[in-house]
Amino acid sequence: MLLIQNGFKCDYEMNIFINIFFAKNEEGRITTDFIDNGTEICVKTTIEFEGKSYFGEFSLPFETCKESEKRIKKMYGVCCVRSFVLAAQKVRKISLPWGVLSGIRPAKYVRELKEEGKNKEEVSKILKDIFDVSERKTDLALKVSENEEKILKNVGKNSVSIYIGIPFCPSRCAYCSFVSTDIKVSGKYIDEFCDCLLKEIEYTGRILKQLSLSVQNIYIGGGTPTTLSAFQLEKVLDRLRKSIDFNNVSEFTVEAGRPDTITYEKIIKIKEGGADRISINPQTLNQETLDLIGRKHTVKDFYNAFSLAEKVGFKCVNTDLIAGLPGENFEMFKNSLDGILELNPQNITVHSMCIKRASKVNSEKIPLSNSELLDEMLSYAQEMLIKSGREPYYMYRQKNISGNLENVGYAKKEYFSAYNINIMEEIQTIIGLGGGGVSKIVKGDRIERIANFKEPYEYIRRFCEIIEKKDRIKELLKGKEFIL
Ligand code: SF4
Image (cartoon, rainbow, N blue to C red; front, side):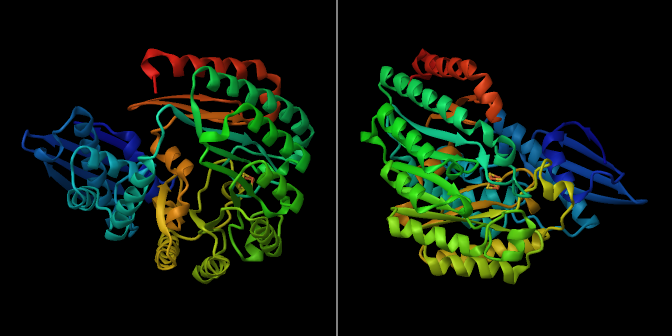
């Protein structure tokens, strides 16, 4: 679609919504005419498509958006997108439960509004009236933000979190959008990768000591960390304990992930290594879906792994589910959610199917649930999980999530994960180690990102650069501008 914007350009925001209503190869013309007359902002959109014209118009009083330069630009963009959506919904009846709120972290926006002094009712009105967010999603965003606040106030001064990326998986899932390589391809690098990781852990530990920074949360993710052998896991966990002062660590999570990698021996090593939280992720309890998406494990494998984790006695077990997996109808999703609820894990994360360009689902065009069905699944999950005594406490959206929908972590109150919240809200520095580990050095509104190499081979071959990056992080952490 050809986009012509008169008066104000916001093609990035516009394209997010154009891609929801029109396929890449569809031809047509979208024109937005923007007028700011000092008292009102008004945008008129015309869509010319398949020989017909469709119109949309949206206006806002200037009062609504004059607070800051940044806010004015945001509101200009919102007006353009809303007027486009009003026109586009005459072409195709696609509902947008999140309206035109396009950011990755809706709860972060809620927090920003609250920090500007707005009360709950005012925030709710902004979401509904300006962004056209549905009542259910507005309630969700407000609830998540409330729960986040409880955890964020505990972020320690001079504290950081640590993330360790283990970029290996036993096979690649069809929808995968993470940093991970199939061990059939990269398994030969695991030993060398672990050797480098041990050095990176030790080096980082020294920096933290020199700067007198304490570690509050540790998260080992990937990939699938339990692709490592019990022996390799033990070495990594051991090096962590020797290099980092665990006195202030209040949360330590290992994302075991794929049930086909989990053994009693590995789980014991993880527990002995100090982790108190573990993730065991079935994604679905329907075997035919697992086969279709290339998970290469059975539903029974998941139940076995879950009961091992329970036997070993972790403080918190998380399970991930994905709504909208290829070929799944509402009943199939319901079956998975109800099955997981029977197991009663402390934490359940419900993801929306997300298609990244590189995934097999995208390249083979495996049919997905439509966004209305996906929203029905998410609404069911929200209702049942809240009824079960869990609360939504963190939430994010990714680009390409069907229907622009969300991923939400639900947990019993005392089991909210501070790491998950911190990574969304970006108010605590995270030091990233391992394959694809991204460090985020936070100072107020400013965040500096420094990323490790994703591929195991690259990580090993260019390990000197990994160490140099850690030196750069040290400089940022001790620099005047980044005193925590
Ligand atoms: S287990 Fe996770 S990281 Fe590994 S291939 Fe599957 S989706 Fe990707």
